[in-house]
Length: 321
Image (cartoon, rainbow, N blue to C red; front, side):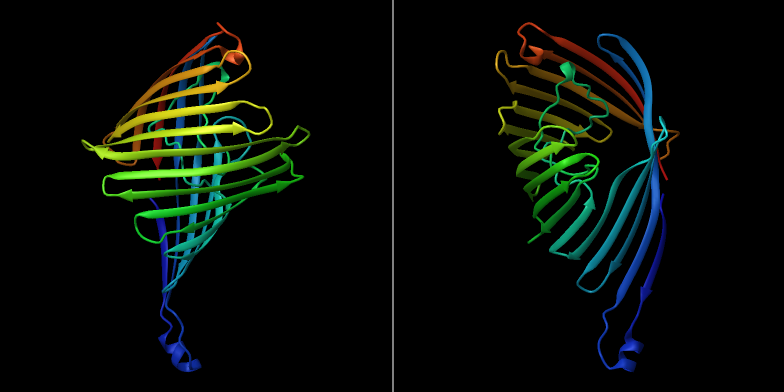
């Protein structure tokens, strides 16, 4: 539930007084958030039990004119563990209905959606590549994106990220064009990224990558399939990843497979996951989700015969206020 303040300003009288036309404006402000608490059991080399989660606040202010808008968003996070505060989105966005510019900290178009991944622990320290290294939400990096929406079906995004001599990066530079197109029950997405990064006190690395995918609605749910490919420009690790998932109402299942191209044996990852959400006391704003995942990695680190397995289960409580 959100608390919203709304102010409409009619400028007809002022226009008569000063002798020129003034557009009508509408200002809105909303504040809300949600609580997310995780209880997790993980069976890897050792069995562990731990908790996590956060309280997220969401404050949004927006000014709308006849043919423009200006919007500001702030989402601070209070963790259940530790004492360091964090944040999700903090940005300024402005433009018109068919184009806009977004500046700050935010996430761009997701080129590798994984569905209901409440828990998806990957074995062997491996992680799939989703053409999302330059998607956004990086500390100490400014992110700017230009959005073009020529019609209701198509959305084009050009994202640019940069940083130099910050607490996290000596240098970070990335460009990421991406697009989505939806026609009825069918949707496609495609994108490319080029990233050059030097962590503070570290060594430079760079890569290019592309991602393509499609989704379609079927039997009351949504199927998503994605393919991403990373090419390391500095003799690093090339990665190919595929995701397939299905969500329908309160439940969802998914599968992720990934392969690293290394000198020696090529590590492979296979992860299956699923989740089911039920309301708490029948309330629409409170729920509990039961989730589990199982993952196996082979030839970890490029060493033939070195395998790893991880099983995990999670109970997630969520309350939106």
